[in-house]
Length: 457
Image (cartoon, rainbow, N blue to C red; front, side):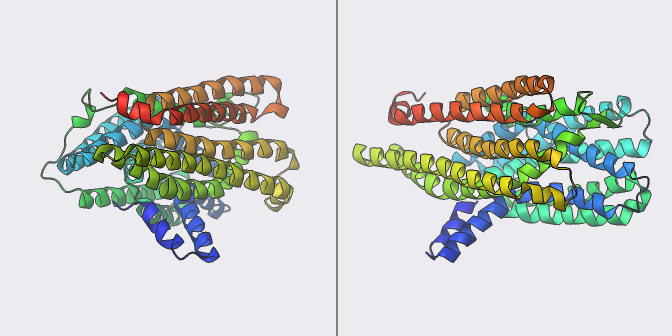
């Protein structure tokens, strides 16, 4: 499929300030759109239900239920996300197109089976006070969300970002509309509306994949064969998602910071809102991430490896290697630069933002450190992206394991030290992971030709 890089290059060819602004705006919407749409959709449903869904605690129960389902589904499917995407990429490189669709269906079958078992166990034993309809909707939403992440990572791997954004817009528009129409049924009505939107979102992505990769076979499990899956990618996907969510779970289930909401699901009033607001600041960084990585870096990356495969001269190979290294470094440092600007803007505007939405100024210090952490996460994604392009899977695994482990340890320490230190565990774990990643990336770039020619099996 044509990647976003081609479309961004078309915009940039106009060679004007307007085209530059348009390219970065487009990349920011594409890169952050699905995440922003999903979160805003849940918030809009909650706001539109005020005064209609009574008591108001049902709205909180709905939002907490969806948040936990998103977190659990991302962590569970993390085992399959990267490894399955690599399997598909390898088959495309081999031009073995006919196996893609049946193995995608096979991946969905495995995901549905595992998610269904987990969802059923959760519904049976974790929500003794809830009715059967809530439990059924819980299972259904969890299974559909797990399948959405598999389809999303598939389309992301194929760089079909525009389709993802369009389908997320459609899906969450239907989710909001459905929830509003069904809100008279209370908590179950809200969950039913979201399920409808999620089902449309998943169906749209599945139909797009089916139409793009036709096959005469229905289902296969070739991707599960030992030599088809990379163990390092299986654990990398798991550790990354675990690292992103582990601090939230600690704050949810620590008695001093978490509150019981429904069943076994908790929330943290002091931690959840600042981290949500902080994540909105990543939009500029995501724009730079997509523009730099999907245009400049990918261009020289392809030229370097094309020259290696096609027998280019040593001088040309070294020149393309130097350009690739330069654009990778420039891309990462531009992400750092633009996120630093975003952080400074948030620092200045934060008091007014909190006043505008009616939140206490006591949240300021936590919001500040969360904004820094969110920015570091974008930089971390940039480093991981380059490592995946270079096929440095074991370094990527070590970095994500380091991130998850440090976030666990430092967040526990911050909880022990008290409210002044909340959020520092998440930020410090990302800072150390980013510095470590830049060190290894610089080291591997310096010997790229040697490893490319001498260490191939």
